[in-house]
Image 1 (tube, rainbow, N blue to C red):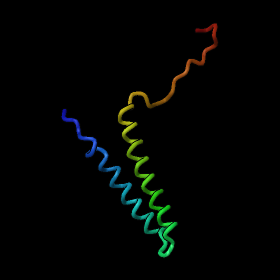
Image 2: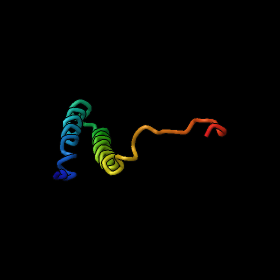
Image 3: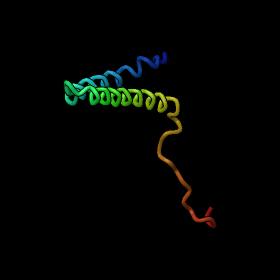
Length: 78
C-alpha cells in the first residue's frame, strides 16, 4: 500500500482552516485600525501553526493517544 505524503494528508485540513481564517478575517478586520488587524493576523497565523503542529503530533504518536487505562483495584486485590 502506498503511503501518502504529509503534504497531501494535511491538505484537506489546511484548506478548511484557510477558508475559516479568510471568513474570520473578513468578519473581524477593521479598516483604519492597523494594530487590531496585525493582532488578528497573528492570532489566525498562530491558529494555523497550532493546527499543523497538532496534526503532525497526532500522526507521529497515534498509538500513544487514546483512552487512559488505570488499575483501580485495591492493593490486596492485585
